[in-house]
Image 1 (cartoon, rainbow, N blue to C red):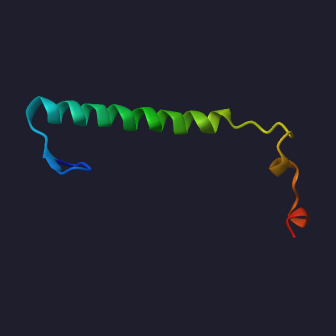
Image 2: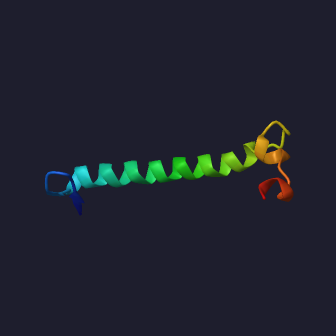
Length: 59
């Protein structure tokens, strides 16, 4: 597998490639969990300006 760095293309092999792929998989899983959690945290409080706007306010 190759990794395009600012300096050059770097070839990842063996343990280095496995570590990179594992870290990438964990990062994607973590970010996906945050996206799912964010949906659960969105609660209408009425405090936000955008929650109080009506379509006529946007004209």
